[in-house]
Image 1 (cartoon, rainbow, N blue to C red):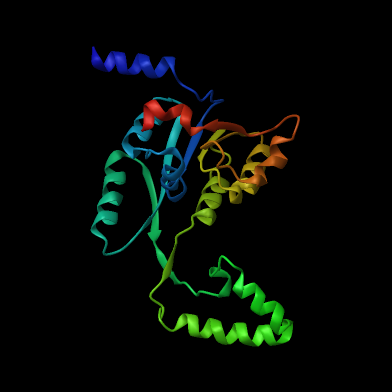
Image 2 (image 1 turned 30 degrees about the horizontal axis):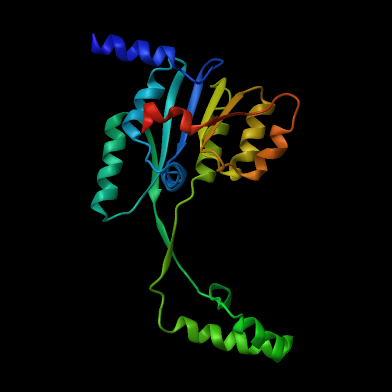
Length: 227
């Protein structure tokens, strides 16, 4: 009875109107970051279960950067595999973060006043010396996490372009605008899932079209299914 109710519930509230064989792409770094705006986290198991209720979806690809040696990260990767996703992963890179004068501000504008007083040529020399001093206490201790999947996702869409009729992309990142446009030019239906207010401005050009536009879906509409 409970399973029957579960399936009926999803049948009644499916938000995606798909046009045939569908490829689902999940850029997890992007999706994970949504929690800052949503106030809740997307549950990978619930997301998978929801998407599996669409018979037209033939592949659900999950892109995740793993931190080698981090047990939590490694366990998460195993969980994703066990759920049933097609997992695409690579190791996270840590890029040393170099601070510069623009990272520092004062309420009374002292730095700007110094610049004005010294003049442009003297200011450049002063700034170079100051930025060297800024680095000394940190000695490379601060790093920026980097693990983008733009290339991998674009490549996978291109490889599969003749195998799907519809594409669901879980990412509002404007870096995917070109591959979305290419998919549309190949007569593919494209659905971009993102939170309200978190969509790259690069999509505005495509949305201004009279036809052959991507469909947008606010992830908030899926809250009851994937939270």
